[in-house]
Image (cartoon, rainbow, N blue to C red; front, side, top):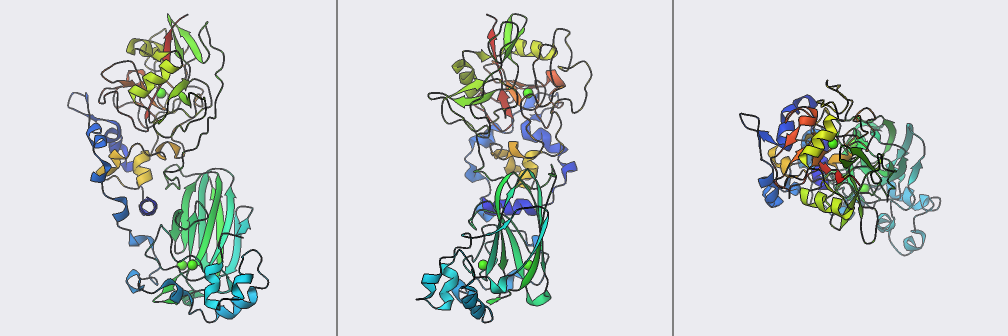
Length: 483
Ligand SMILES: [Ca+2]
Ligand SMILES: [Ca+2]
Ligand SMILES: [Ca+2]
């Protein structure tokens, strides 16, 4: 997966070209506009039918520095041998050993040869802390003690077995992180920059010869400046590293990984109901409806659950503002989650009535569309953006946890304050599709990429999937009869 992510980073994303894929992402349409299921069969198929991520060719175009020909790097050279020839570095290591804190090599080095020193050093034990952005730091891998990392998962064919320098930083808020590396000594020096999501070269979020720009979320990251080894000859030396963080590019590559699940909602408390309805609900005619798209909590015992993956344990629905609503929900799970909260899925009649309001408008806020008032038209399709391609296999990967974590993708419940009905129901149009009680499988209202193709606004209706289907775009809300 990590290997694959590297491929995603390197493919230029022409967001303007993704419009045609919107339809493919959710449904296809026959000549009269009825939806035709193209996804269910894909998702029923074992994903082994899709290209093995591990064999995704690594685009060499990502490596603009022609001084690093792939074919010239002999993979057969043992890592330790490749590191050892740094004759000029060896004396430095021995002396630097006395002044460098952290690495637990003092005792080891007393009994081992200098060639073993690098192996004994944990490069992540005492990283250089970057505590402000933007920043420019200088360094020199010639004098680095650490020769522990030979390759990185995002570029395993690159021989990085020379000495490395590791930095740590904490990203304060999501944004586009740009790392620019300058090998100040020219051709005799070639160090490369690697961005890591954990103190582990197998958790590699991106790698570049010179410049790397990646969307990142808040949290800790590590940067490894490592010495490239050409034909068994390491090319260590001085460098300048510039690190900056800008507002996220909503269409840019993402550093999110499949393991990034999180439980951002905790166990929320629902606000008091309106019109005599239970908490989190409001009165519409003779029924109550959740004011917000459903978030989930586990039951027995009650606890937080990720909103970025299909639930694997018993869950119930919660309706409150400011939560990450749950996509990845099938009609079956949605129905059970409502029942576990003493509610039920809304009938199609109820859902339409709530969306169109007492005056029967096309949008919850009125008769005429106001683009952006709801979360209704993301410029870039998240799957095309995240996977970095529009090849057909991505449409069977629509359960990927990162799809709803891209910048400006899924919004928190009620965050679009204008996307509200006269009766106080939020996000009926856009954000997530919403399952209704139709046993044949219907979800309504469109989602954050599209609120037009299957009908405008409240009239948007998708019938291409049975109730067992789920993907990142499928959510729900609950109804109940009025007390
Ligand atoms: Ca290294
Ligand atoms: Ca380089
Ligand atoms: Ca919705």
